[in-house]
Length: 234
Image (tube, rainbow, N blue to C red; front, side, top):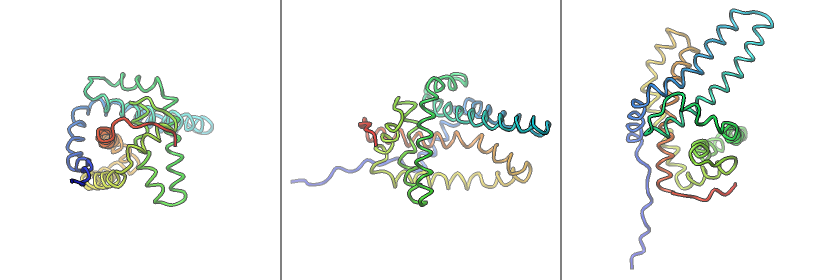
């Protein structure tokens, strides 16, 4: 009698995920960079305006700039996720922005819920914050591509990660470490030439889509392994 348990399916290795991430990044580079350029340009414009004007006008422009920058940064992040998820479809920058906009309110609620829960974990202790960020890190992908919102999106994310939390954490840690080593030297040079604030914006412009792709590939692999899971609320 064979009592051997079936072997647990495993996620692809970090190097393999990085290779696939790089391939997609190259193929979608123009669209992804174009999306990220919009909030980047707005930040530059409002930053310059607050310097040119003084007094009340400057204060008002700063407030408007912060609100619009945050809104467009969030919208751009959704557009990047959509462009990555629909990478086999030849969509352009405009389409990538329009698709998630139709449900931006519900996506905003998912983002706020995730942020509050993760921040709550970090307030108590570092470890719960890390655990929550791993459990609920795929909530936005689920909301966009599975039309599942609110706490159901977070519940679905946790169920996807269940049994693979340590593996997912190690994928993020190892992948982030490798990318950090690769970009550290050019970032130091750029920071020296352009200043820390601007260099951070420039690297965010190019690196944010890369990490979105990397995360999305992990999400796709977990979906393949777990399949359709009930989306019961937490």
